[in-house]
Amino acid sequence: MDNDFKYVSSDHVFRFSCGPHISCFNECCRDLNQFLTPYDILRLKTSLKISSEEFLGSYTRQHTGPESGLPIVHLRPNYDDALTCPFVAEEGCLVYPDRPSSCRAYPVARAVFRNRESGILTEYFMLLKESHCQGFQSGDPISVKQWIESQGLEIYNEMNDLMMEIISLKNQFIPGPLDLKTRMAFHMACYDLDAFREKIFNRGVLEPLQYDERLLLEAKADDAALLKISLQWIQKNLR
Ligand code: SF4
Ligand code: SF4
Picture (cartoon, rainbow, N blue to C red):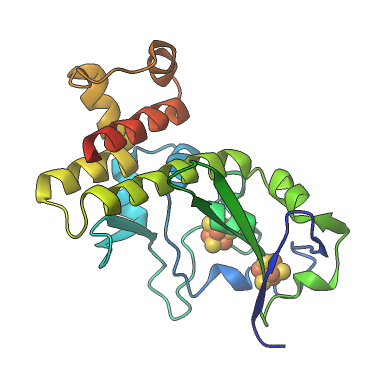
């Protein structure tokens, strides 16, 4: 079977099962070419109990998007012929509860489009069938919507949609490459969350921008709330 993908609705029902009982177990954790979203990084560095700076230095490579001019972060594969993920082991994914959104979503992929005039967000879904993946041979019937819930993807989608807004704003207001200062600010706020925390709470440079006080308080103890603030900060700086 060749690789195949098709657009489906959120009610589309498919069968899928993955785990050590499947002959291709771990096959998809090699040949790694996986970019990471800010929320992926937050979850992974929390799972590994290291700082965002340490995570970025130890597990990622980065480049500037040729069209967007934005920094893009990839998970860095092991230096072996198979380019395996640094988190794959014989028993499976070592960071499974905090695995990145693309790993969680597979075999479903999601794209979103926001209408600039109405502000309405439209979701599109695709079902990917790759020739090496045996997961479609078994499993109980499940709809795309149920799959998204079962994989804990709602919070990832919410955060990734905020990031998509930023990319769209950036392309609208600052087309082309960013100057070094803006690029560094973008990198810190999106990816190096611990540095951002240090900047706003210990050096008090967040204002004069207005933030929801409750969210600000929450952000002192909660990285997800902090990421919402950092993404808002970037949005305001891009306008
Ligand atoms: S993070 Fe986990 S699921 Fe994703 S590629 Fe790596 S080992 Fe596989
Ligand atoms: S190739 Fe498919 S079935 Fe096999 S481990 Fe990956 S997702 Fe699971």
